Image (tube, rainbow, N blue to C red):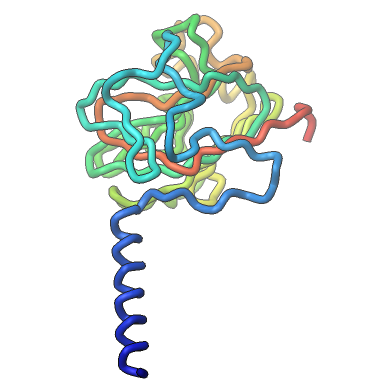
Length: 234
């Protein structure tokens, strides 16, 4: 009887291990804080559509193992939230393979397609020399203010963007790596040295969408959620 029990326990542990290996993207348990709203249920693409269009793209993106996945070279187009947001914190987990590049944009408007919003960069940092283009930077505008806690390609990272009034923060794996004030002299000066210097309205605070970009490299997303603030005051 004891051998039988041990054998059954051994088989059960093997089965649990196999499930963990085969379903690496199953969503973690949701927060009990009701102020958070999930932006991806792990099963459907509800709440997202193609930038500049009304529907979700037919190619490039797929829900796989509880994750939202962008295929390498799939040309699935940029995704945006159906809803717009003004003051909030947005969290998500992501991973990229080696040499891949992607990003999340916020303050996204469809009135300026050449530069729709500010980008939280996501990239294999080993391929990047410009400090303004590494992971968690304000892409091409502001570099990180502390040493990056990024994990190696193929591993999951957790990111966070906080917007409250003119104050913006970028977080990576539990560390605040960048903060800035919209309209500040530092941001204005940095914008003049960036590729966005001639884009009208770029750098302004707007109520906008959140975008998952398609840079034609593989990317995985999970545990995307947002919490809106009712006021711009701390």
